[in-house]
Length: 221
Image 1 (tube, rainbow, N blue to C red):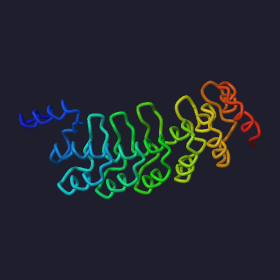
Image 2: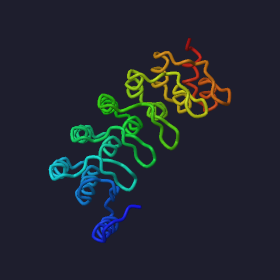
Image 3: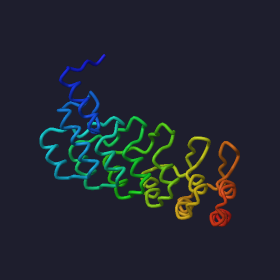
Image 4: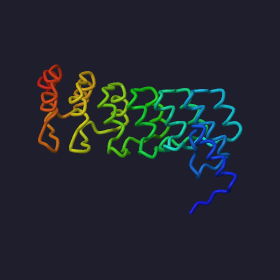
């Protein structure tokens, strides 16, 4: 069992009451500096972030949701902050308590250049969050063609199946994302694959009333 000193308990209580994210007990440096770093990351205050890192704030400190400054930067598409945190030693694979990684967050937001930076820094495409979704499913569901291109180029199988037997083409088709679907088709997405209900991407597009996509998928080889 982890035990806290009375001084640390008081400090954490003050931070929580003030609305400042508390850091995990495992953070190896001054918890006050870590908490300030997370606030500065949320605000995008690069000057404050630089000062706090210089003073010893831990780049992998996490808030109550398990989010690191790198994950916050990825959610916001803040490339400068992400680059600084990576340079400071941030763990590119560190997920939140919900299992969301920086790559997932950047993919969901459509931040293609940041996705490429994270991949170059060692981000992996395989992890899934508590919704059993990997980064590429979020990119497809949101229709971010440039992100899909980056993830596929990194080695993701365009015809991989995820929960309920859904492919990324099915996700794009169901949400009506024509540009994403067209990109996936150029990368040889298989229109004949079926989910666990026996439905193809074309069937899903029809079911959801995506008429423009129906024509695109019907014309696919």
